[in-house]
Image (tube, rainbow, N blue to C red; front, top):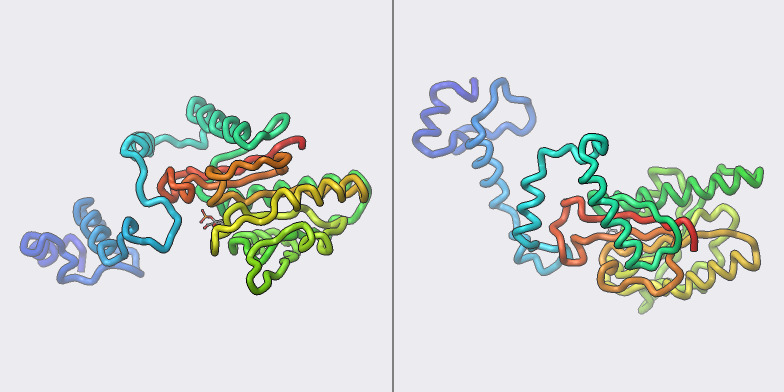
Length: 280
Ligand SMILES: Cc1ncc(COP(=O)(O)O)c(C=O)c1O
């Protein structure tokens, strides 16, 4: 039966929504469309069954942001942001944010970066940058590039394991111990070799909010560079601690973070970022 056929319209008149008496399409693509108002009611009623984000105390994800932020997002939904030629001011605003965040983290020299849809995307970009820079260094030295590995603790968000799986990198995961939920230089040292594309450390873990010993790991990597001539960069995953605990170390080669978990933006609003420093 067509979704626009008589009985359905009668249902709409009677109940305000035809899906009170008719099955909601969820598998087959319907033969005919539905009015925008019905679509709005249908989705709204489905979502009403869900938990209320404002009452979800089990997450650090921001549930409120300023109406002005919502206003500017809604007013620009029609802008194809990625078309920088057509929308150069939007691209410039993004770059301003990247430059200011790089300054906040004391990044030396030129920096590059991008806003992303979430910290997972930011970490994929950061991880790829680690891998490609490692490959470039290895190729320049005439060395093999077939077995990259990445070192991180068991306290990281699952996205780091995903990165390794998607992009063919061996994960070297430092196990946590009873009562010890973060990692430091002594934990990572044994795992580092010439195929290590980088070390990932967390500023505010997803599970407990603790931070890895970023200063200690950074010092270790500098020492390895001096003593073994191995350039192993550090990526700080600052998804939840980025805005509240700016790094006082040498700026890591990469940092990614999230405004949505730093309680300033709602999730999924392109409010996360990935930044890479050229030096340091
Ligand atoms: C430390 C950490 N890294 C990465 C992520 C992934 O962030 P997203 O959900 O925005 O992709 C999270 C999310 O909770 C996180 O806590």
